[in-house]
Structures are given as structure tokens and as C-alpha cells.
Length: 189
Ligand code: F6R
Ligand code: ZN
Image (cartoon, rainbow, N blue to C red; front, side, top):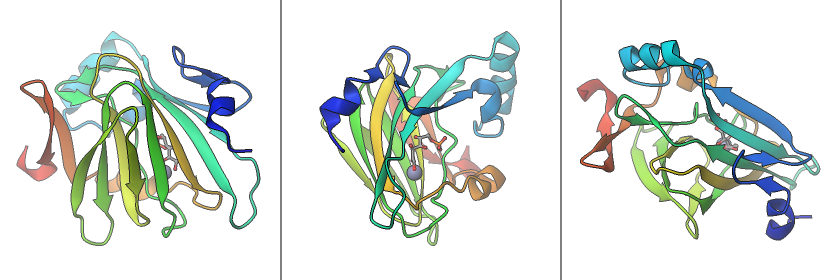
């Protein structure tokens, strides 16, 4: 069932669509409150409402022990000096970990431990895997000039909890400084 070639043969790297999968699209208007620079966000939205990312999700089975997976595609671009990003979430079932595999493009993941608030910035690019432990909020950003595509694999019962992040956002912000992604504390911007 889980065969990377089989998955990728259904994948269109230009549009980010995964044939036969449930597709979730997030446009700029769906990301209200996610970017630190509200003025830059409103200015960008006034100019248009582009697709920021798309995730094709596959849920082969939902028994205990099964895995679900999704192929994500984040379009390149910035809002102010923040890179295009995903909403970010904790898993509804908090112990659920997740494995991310970079497929194309260049990006980073912001990982925040729910209990301690400790934040880490890790690269996500082809031939890199990122282990997201349980109880860790995660957000993905495209730091390059081409679409960033990746595969995320997670327990069938993981679920998504967007509520906590929507309320308080991540403690850290990732911005471009001298052409590089840099993690800064949100309250020190
Ligand atoms: C699933 C997972 C990814 C994300 C995708 C979009 O647990 O982490 O498939 O769902 O990167 O991010 P969100 O869901 O935060 O909009
Ligand atoms: Zn996740």
C-alpha cells in the first residue's frame, strides 16, 4: 500500500495535486492571523488572493496501527519578510508523531514543544527527513523560489488541532535576513 513511486506517479509537482486524494487548498485569505506583519498581509490580500498551498491526503485505513499520509505543496513567495507558510497545528491526539520527507524545493519547519515552548528550526529539502515528535506544534515554510513539496506520514488517529495555534500563534517567527531564514521570538520583533 505504501509505495513512494506509486504515490508520486499520481502527483503533479506543478499544481501540487495528488490524483484520487482528498485535496485541501489554502489561499492567502485563509491564513489571516498567521503572518506577523498584519500590514503586509492586508496589502498582499488587497492585491489578490493567491493559492499558498495544497495538501493531498490519503487515508488507506483507519485501524489502530494504520498510517495516513499527505503530499503538501507550498508555493514560493513572502508576505513582508516572512515566507509563505502553513497554518500549523498540533495533533488532536497529542502523542502522535509525524515524519516529513522533502521531495522538491527548499524549506524549513518550525517545531514548538507544547509543554516547554522550546522552538527549533529545521531544514526540509529533498533527501532530508524531519521527525516531528508528539506534542509538538509544526509549521512548514517555503524558503526557496520553486514550489516546496513534501510527504508527511502520521498515525491514522493523529487528527488536526488548529485551535491553540489560531489563538496564540507560534512563539517564534521565521523571517528572511540577508537571504537566509532566521528564527526570531515573536515578542521581540
Ligand atoms: C498532517 C500534516 C501535514 C499538514 C500540511 C498542511 O499532520 O502535518 O500534512 O497538514 O503540511 O499544514 P496545516 O495542516 O497546518 O495547514
Ligand atoms: Zn501534522
